Length: 614
Image (cartoon, rainbow, N blue to C red):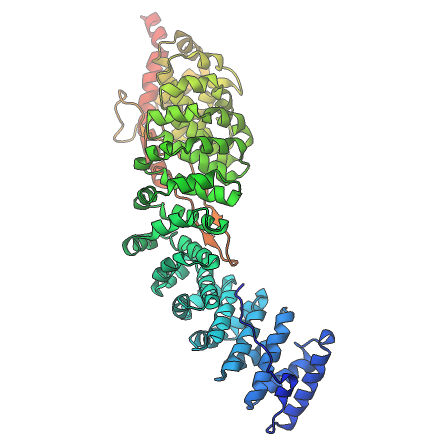
């Protein structure tokens, strides 16, 4: 809530009402008001007689009476904040138009007090309250500025007011007042700017008003409230790609400032918003590199290892985006992020933290075989195995995608088998969530590629949940081309292995053979790849190429709702390769590959029959 500077009654107290040039009705109003003030605990000042008396004094041409009315409104509203009628607001708005500084100060304080109530916020704007407030924000009097800006801050917390304020011309004086030497004005102005970052349209208006340079300069403020408001506002501004581009061009020290604000000498809420701002900036590859170059990793790791959930969430969301850039991945591993990330998989109950931590490990695993080995050695496989069946679908999707990428490596395969990962992956191929199904199957498929031993596949042929056989049949019969692709590709891998047991099991499964035969009859789309090539596609991470058909995972869009009732829009960055474009590409690959893969597999499956017929 915007604060209002104090408005005190005149030194003469009630004697301030005395004036020689007072009309009879004004004298009556004074007398009544004094009576009401003496019995204020029993009086409703917003209705009937008390309000009539205040209105009479507010409309007086006598400046002293106007001051008295304004002071009375300020005093009353300071102690009684509730929804009021147009009749109550009308005299206060009239007083805002006064040229007298004392009247302006008290009236703006009263309006700011009433603007705490949600219904009043809307009504004040509907009654034209913005215009006089904008004028008062440009007053030479600091007290008037403070109250006017405080009122505007409160009004800007109402959703229906935000776009109206953005188009009213208020942002220009607000941006200017954010530079004020008076800390109260500065706090109110930066708080108001924060509340205006709710929508793309409002953020663009804020940028046009020249707010960015002011906000960046105030990151070095010694006031924690100003730091918080400015950091959060910049975080919200950084949601938009065009704004990130502008920030990159015009504010070369922004990342350095934000990294510094993650330090332990700052308040936790400032640290949190600094990490979230860097997270939004790191939606772009240039900023991903810059966070590392600015030595932000040690600060992020410290926040990751802290206790408060908001700090951990902000840090892990940021490192997730930073880890998308392949150039950063070794720096992240060397900085010691693997143990705390794996630890979060074990202890955190927060869905978003689990998603971000798992996705970060997936990004790192996609970079190199060395990373996959180190992730396995850090205990990630055991932690995922222990929790994956009991976490929300969004986390299951990320965990299965991570396992699919880890399974790309030759070295971690044995660990995956030893930890019993097939027990959970097979179950999850029957999930009602298509992404979880696909990711689980892709992980099993990657495990089937050039495994040193196929004992686990034989042992799990019929169980759990129908085993390998059951999931292959389900996927072969699926209407999802991607699922058909995964199944036919995996069957071909198993057939081309040296394990005679698996070949026998496949050949003896009538349902598998019939389903494969049916897929051979599909008409390949133009551009079908040669059957000698593997069904390649981007992995679930997108920064590595999987030898199995890929699946596409979705990412959570997280809204950080903090700060002066504003909405901080901070969506997570989609990992490279995910999203509609990747899905369309994968679908096309599958449509081309399935018939060819099925024909090759069917030829192997029916070799015995062909030899017998000859």
